[in-house]
Image (cartoon, rainbow, N blue to C red; front, top):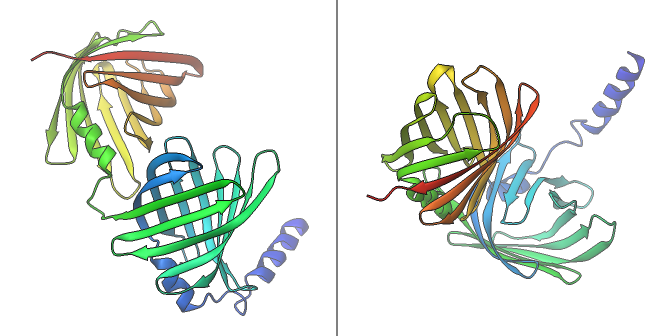
Amino acid sequence: MKRLGIVCVAVCLFVSPALAQVPQKILDDMQYLVGNWETEGTFEGKPSKGTFSAHWVPGKHCLTLAGRNPDLSFSGISGWDPATGNIVETWHRSDGVLVEIRYAEITPSTWKGTVKLTNAAGKVLTGKCQLDKTADGFTFTGAAGDLTASTKNRRLHVSEKPAHVARWLKFLQGSWSSQWSGANLNLDGENEIRLVGDHTLLVTGSSGDGPTAEIIGWRADTQRIVMNGYGAKNGYWHAEYGDLHDDRLRGTVSGLLADGRAVSGSIELKKIDDNHYEVRFDGTAAGSPLPLTAKLTRKKK
């Protein structure tokens, strides 16, 4: 208890009301980034497309940040540094790189600042960056050492899907046959996938255990493709794909097999061509490893 009390005192010192008032102008500036964005440009020398989102934390004093491109995922936080008056973004990348951006010159149309990148080996690179607001979003340019990034970012409205999500929903429509391998489960079967409205797929089909039904849709608030399925003998699965690209979807899945075992793990859908895609599951069933792969082929009309 004594140690807990010391921690509480320390926290209170750092959230004193006299120190915790973020200027309204800074909050207004940060508000511009709130929402979901589609990005396109170059990243460290390669063409890149991806997504970016920023949302207020409870109390509305800083932003949580998340982004991804074909090679990396990013997460971070943005807030105000009262000592310098800077807006500071701290990013952690999936390759172990730490990025700190400090915007020191902030006008209604342009933010200018510095960038500090620390790679996984501990090497530090520094440089400059700039954010310019545009009619439908913003552009970002930055450089740290010989690493550069230049992106155009377009705001996605709440009801709008990223282009690659719409392409996936279109691609999946039709009749498919599936062949599974990797475990002694009777999963081979056929599916019919049709579009309902403009954002939901209804899947009906069968496997060796009996009939199946599934619904697939876009969840705009979390920027994920969400899937809920039901099979014979109480089989159930829930998947969320948050790592989204033109040629693949990656996410997590959990549920129950037809024999009642709980299953969970990671899942990937990979597009091979217009008439084929693969599914790879890497997880466990009742605590035991359960690697699964499937090849799906579009049936000829």
